[in-house]
Length: 415
Image (cartoon, rainbow, N blue to C red; front, side, top):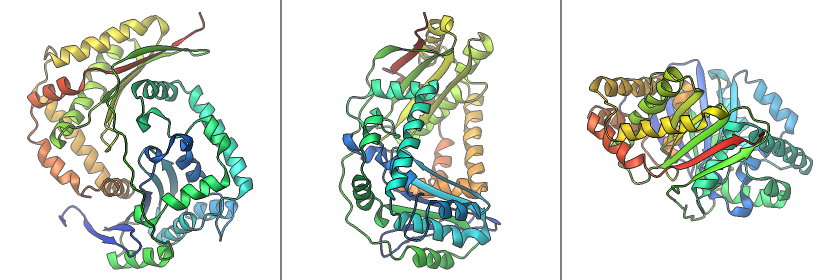
């Protein structure tokens, strides 16, 4: 480990927990606890169960009821969060360093001792059903759901992390508990902590509060990886003012160097205010307020998106501009210069530096690196590789990835 970057130590505890301690001079400490289970691990009749369980872990333990959990989290006087995505379920607390041990104790309690009270399940069922309806009302969320549904046949990415109404209404306490006990186990757990404490002190704290979490056999699962379908569909929705276009590409099988080139391309395509699509649709034509691209290089995911929202009269013009811009980029009619690429490299390097400067960001970064079985200092090699990426590499990855998209257009049916 390069001590000049950060002082870290990694442990695997007797029950299988993988612990990363990062020691730095800070008054703000951060803990992230991640379980390597998410929506891609759910069967069809389980879609939404990880997200439901994430909610339920705050609803009561052998030691605390729902009110006491909320009170104890509030008394840390920092920030706390929980989320479920396709590959993991994560719990985090960032607070003053003197609150770290109490934070560890609370997280251990909700992960190990949750009781899933029947009355709380019924309350949370209603909350999640409302959350699904809110997502449907949000045209951006709804549009991404529709393009995923269109893009895949059997991939877990076809289904929303939040699940569907049918499943949410059917989940029983027994079903939730069975999935929880089978999957939320220490040997699927990674804990990352950024603090001023010594590595031994951190290890002792984690062992003290997580020692009773029993190691279990991990189920062997094959995650279906699927290329997106090259199809286009128009859907209609009532009572919307903006109409959306979403393009989805998958990029499985790229080398790490190609993924870094794609990251640079993504910034140039639609991330910055000086990006190709932002300038064409917003600055030059005034067609859209929202226009962006984004990518997810997580293992088993590997997706790149282009999204915009426009007036009904501008849908087809916006579509034409997006597709012409992509073709001009691939054919090198849009000229990328070394200074453009160097600027994009600098932006990526700045974002990495920002993560390293922030306790919460660093804790989250190393957690996800370890959950993906990657080096926690993987950015060191990435930064070296970035320096060798040239303009030709950007054009090549554009030609390789920006083809055969799934296209979804959402339009108002008010007429």
